[in-house]
Length: 194
Image (cartoon, rainbow, N blue to C red; front, side):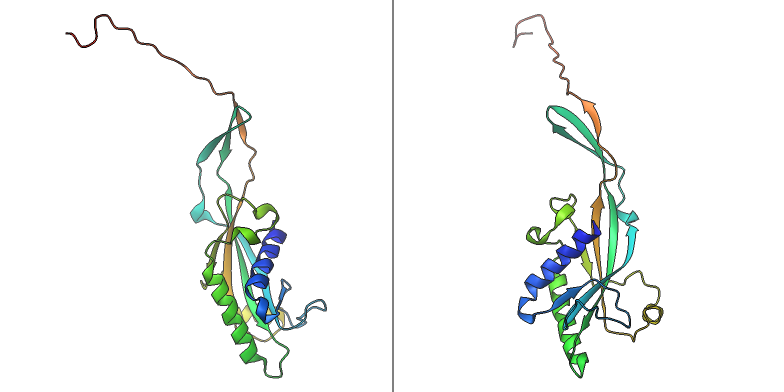
């Protein structure tokens, strides 16, 4: 599922930033970035946190009819996937290029509160509820300074981006064939007379 999320984000950014000729990476932004397979300039989306979204938790059930049988589904678990996004340039003075690129990425992500259907990959296609996106909110990192220290690199400008996906972890319950009951009421007398 996470690989489909990565492929979806790569497709969205490559489509929207096509004129920039930017590589998209999902590697850790550590002191050895970029990996050999990534050419600069690049946008790096590092998946740093995955957790259940308890605010969207639901105990509701929904029903559907399939092949003449009623199936009951428990609401899916909602999961927040948080990315730290950085831009990387090979220029001698990379800050201007990186900030420009990060600004372009920010505009793309703010444009889509829900990922467009035409970029969805794998398990995300037809997912209900659809993938929800939130950019520019504080992330789950306690301290960016500690994060960069743990990565062994120098602090960089970054964006936080959280996508909420659904995971259907429960098998549907087969309730069987629907039954109908017809009730007929008979009254004595003639209609319209008292």
